Image (cartoon, rainbow, N blue to C red; front, side, top):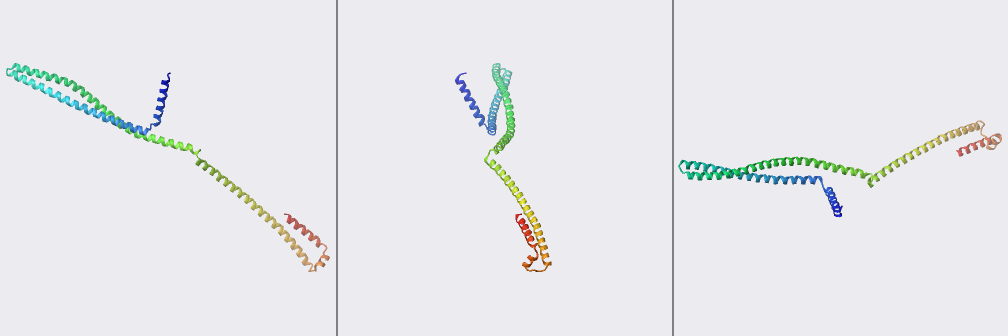
Length: 256
């Protein structure tokens, strides 16, 4: 394969690719309808010219046919008058007009067939244009729908990679993290509150026991009567033991 053949093929391939990419279905359809309308106008003009030519040929045919009939009548008249030479001349004129009419008749028949063909082509083209207009509207609607769907699919495909979608997903994860942290803090707060109440309940038991013991001690001292402190200590050698036990209980409470 020669270099010029390869280069020519590459150029044609690139040009075809450029043309294919540049073709817009809607614009091409509109231009196709415009071209068909122009063809229709030209065909109508051709039909009009053919009909006009047919009419002129028909007029010429009728005229020559009428002249031939007139010369035939004149030949009969001359012959009835005994003028054979004049009758012969009239018949010669009739022959000329008859031959001319026959020639025109052949042309007229051809023109009539041509006009009929052109009329059929005109009707067929008008029908095709009407059908093409209907198809054009449907194809344009389908092309618009396909283009819109392609744009939509492209947009959906780019959602996962765009910064806006990425930011949206990050914020969603952050909200979920905040909610989880809030639930954890609430759970820890609830446990601390329960432990505080448990300590209060335990402390109240100890305080009640201590108050009961104080009441017992106070009741015992009152039943023995009011004595001075020195005498009470002397008469009650077990008081130091009670104080010691009380101190031990206080230390236990402090260590709680």
